[in-house]
Image 1: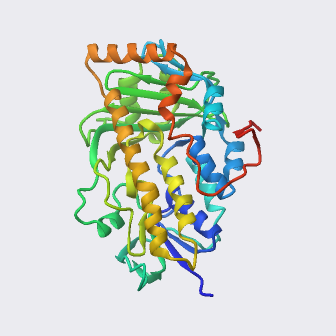
Image 2: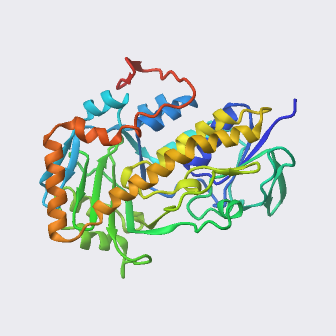
Image 3: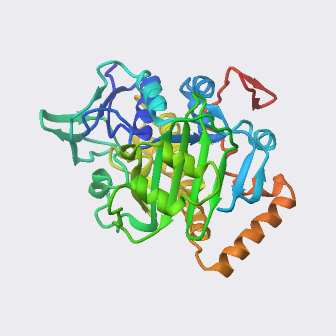
Amino acid sequence: MTTSRAVVIGSGIGGLTTAAALHRSGWQVTVLERAASLEPVGAGISLAPNSQRALDVIGLGDEVRSLAAWQGDGGMRTPSGRWLARTDSAAAADRFGGPLVLLRRSVLIGLLRARLPADAVHTGTPARLVDPGSAGGGPALVRTASGDIEADLVIGADGIGSAVRTTLFPRHPGPSYSGFTTWRLLAPGAGHSFSSHETWGRGSLWGSHPLKDGGIYAYAAAAVPAGTRAADDEKAELMRGFGDWHDPIPAIIAAVEPDQVLRHDVWHLADPLPSFHRGRTVLVGDSAHAMVPFLGQGGNQAIEDAVVLAHHVAPDEDLGAGLAAYSAARLPRTTAMVRKAAQVSRMTGLSGAPAVALRNALMSAVSRLGPGLVLRTFDGICDWEPPQRTYAARTRGGRTSRP
């Protein structure tokens, strides 16, 4: 029997999860990464129950949960510190079968890399899709500086600016600017004790979350024109924009080193692709369905993509049918997610005083009606189940228990 070869272009969370899932199902996997190392672009990541169940498929769910911070009760606040809505972590875990957890992206990248053979990942290796191949015929062709690689399957995991996507669908308009820029950072805990929170201001927001190792993962967003940058440094820009917000926000900004603040404009695929595959080539993650971060599902959906793809493209089976099944399963779900995230971004972007006051009043009213009403907005998202049956090591009655 000939070994089926898969080439993954891009080594972000979506690319590495896909590589791990395909390797587990019997593919010979090669990951090609343009950057010189696997140092992740991003500070932390929140993993909802849906992506944790996907990680269970490849045997990583329990390890992730043991290393991550389990998000406790928290909620949404105003810049003055007033609570608009409180979250009930136990109610969320009961409804969706597990908690929301947070960890450093570098930790997740390391865990995924460890699931692959030592020679599977090639950094410092720019790659270009030359030929997507034919599912019923010839192989796909990937070009690198050291030579061409023929592959039975190519996975485009090369992010929002995906060159693989452009090759597959040259007439698609590509990503559009969302209207927001974002900052992300990891800060030392500095003895601060606080509940996870997201604070919504006028056209801006801030989120703070404690990590299991004592550090803090924080992020911010603001509605500004694309390409806007600080005249001095991004730490100073954060202090100007958020330094008078409630504790512990000013202290978190003060504690971080200026070169540790990451800033990126947010682009998304507002226009869905006609398909996620062509020939022997398929897209996962931001390459396929980049979304704004306000739903917290970008990385989670990439992880879902990985296990669904591996489920449908078992080696030595009909690749064309498998890729068609993958597109049919993922395109409607992720399109709906992109649209829902954009709806949340429009609420976040409100800046007029009357509109912000009305938004805040509605949030408070919904929160007072009970956590079930708030959690219902995540029905169909966090309760997703992978096509494979999985058995996490620590479950009781369908709910993952704290180790």
